[in-house]
Image: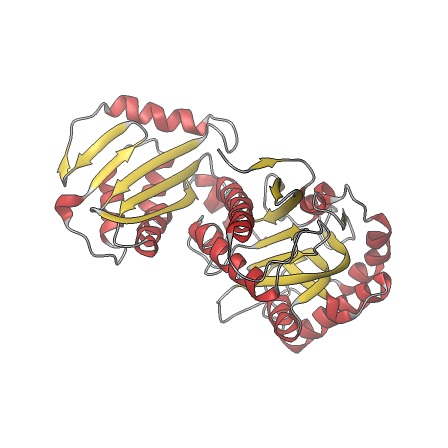
Length: 413
């Protein structure tokens, strides 16, 4: 049983945070497109960002800010324009965005982190953003997480949010998070955008280490389409307002905090995979028997990212051969006679030998998942073992439908 419980509130569930989201006119649709997360005090800040060589200005801006100063008070996110591949003017827009928000909040520009999402090659509509910031600051409140979560989405069908609470020592500690992502999901760091807040007291070095490990087990283990974004950003704040003793190194309490952080990240990562463009179900690939966890995660991610596996699931075709082929090309050595594949309750391959199974029932299992409840009964489970090692790993993805091509074929037209 987990040491924590799920609570409402998202990024404003932890003490000392406010948030807001509104329509500033950045999206042609007129939907909410500008979000703010604000800590009442300076918070320890950590980040994990895309490793792509073509990056958004916000990514370079946040990396530089966090290298110079591992703390922040505010995160400003615009949706509609990615501000990626926009040259020196895009960089100037990121700087100006932070400066305008800092002035409105009466804080230092260095305490502002920025994020963007939308169409690559398009600059932020700065006039609309600057006009919206005073309203955004004025509307920020302790119940504003939902509005912020709605304001950061693009092709997402649903906002993504969670908060957990646990006792560390004798004091309650909370972690909340919101995220966006639906397409261009195959992160080499974290995911499109995810923001996490916490009210524990943690040293900068430890908080960054925790976030990196959590990203490896969550956002780095999801895939929708094999494309890594220019804007991938995972930012986490810890403001110490729970008044817990300071954590500077790993121990019992720090391990519990990291487990909570990882759980929040996994929930948000799964929500992104489930909301993949055109997806009808979530796919969870569980791999065991590898020499180490990293190898198991690599195999799991390769299977989850296979276009052939994803297409078969959409077609409700229990074609285990595609799973075997994906495992075999993952770059992780294993003996073929040790391979075991199971789809739901259906064992299809054991000791490298195919087994008889009820194909109609297995197809019905895939159909049932497509008709299930969001993130609950709509999950296709693929369990693969590649040997007798202790390494385990899980990855999440979705099926590949006709609608994915339609959404992306018409993305800018």
